Image (cartoon, rainbow, N blue to C red; front, side, top):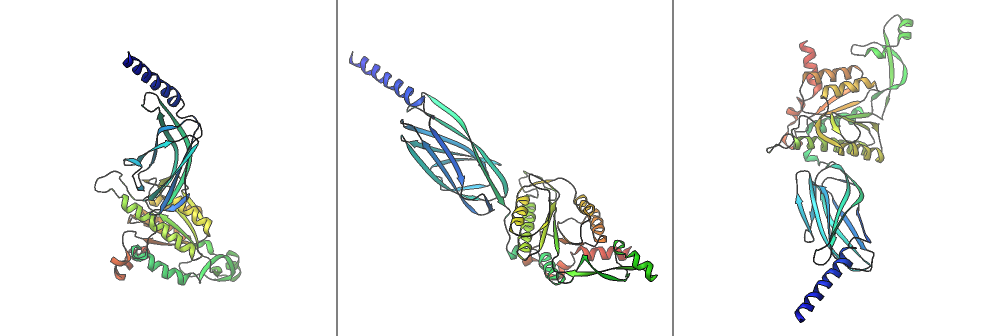
Length: 380
């Protein structure tokens, strides 16, 4: 008889705790999550802060939180969580025990190894009674966004083409003609574009005259990024590393030019979740705009590079420097570069695969598009 009452009492206690604790396991549970920064560069370390609060008079014996993070995130210190890695996302599972009217704060150190624009929204909660007879689940919408800029390169990983162009640009910067500063007219010289002919002065003098332009110390640079042919998921690489290197190079060049007070624009031929073209501008706000555009690039080509350059021809903007970051040697690309040069622009090629330390001056000089175009003209 005593055993019967013991079993009955135990059953009633189990049922009571299941009804009291399990039924209201997720009532009064509040969860927030935030990063200590909303923007960073690839390779930086962030702090992820989780705050979970039990705002009721009953304890929560166990609470499991599941959320997805990009696979590029690396968590440091995994004692209190479980990670299931995938190729694109990873599942982050952590456990809590909450006493009544208590708040728990956990800090995780995360290293962002890849760029991107990440929006983290859903957290899945599961809890129940002490023995797991009653389970309660719900999803919580948490709005978190993080923009990871491309990794910046140091000097030894920058190609010689960049160093060579930078030295030439530093000299030309102070003698660059400004199409909006007209100081008179002069005789036509071979190579002057037709859109600079001063027709009134030509009629007045009886000979062909062109506008004589002043000079400016405020040049413009447009970066053109070629994403190349990337095949995602190949075991031995399908161009992903090379494409990321090119994006990092574009980001490094943009940061350095803006730091020198140069107005910089950006365009590319890839799919993106951000802007496909950024007009030239300067300052820290414009730098963030450029970095965000580069963060949103997807490793898939949207259009050929020649079409991208022809779109710049259609812009009909003021003469500027075009820096094309590409390994392409296609004739269609060279022809598009010629069309830009006929409008008064200067087009230069930077090969992202040739680093400064591994490239001699003689070898790098032969890669200039300007030299190759001159050779084509001489052959014609």
